[in-house]
Length: 132
Image (cartoon, rainbow, N blue to C red; front, side, top):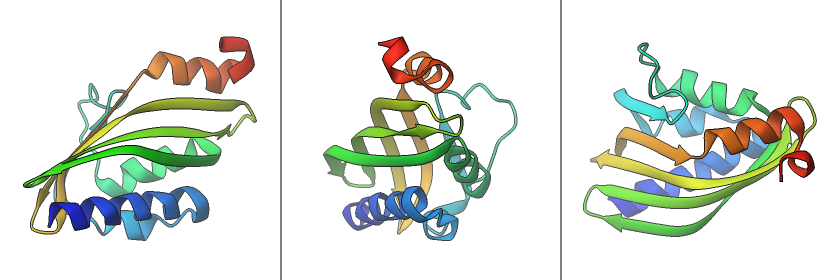
């Protein structure tokens, strides 16, 4: 079950990034999911999947993630990825990280994404070439 859900997540993220399809990725998450990344984690206000993924997509003009490693066992998945694109200000960026999914039945109940927010932030504001 976890493997099928992880594959659906990867496909849904691709649709979100390429087509701005928010519904497909949100349908994979439980209504009461715990969802955050290293930027939103310290936020006292809990967001739902729709708000989280809309905010993610709104940060970029163009974005594409590719997955290097998928480690899936029982009801968990660790997905290692690289993401490239252009910020809404027109600056190119690239960053990498890992997302952890906890899955019950066919729904993602907990999601965390880990990456270097300073590297990403500098690239979005200053541009990739200037921050290297």
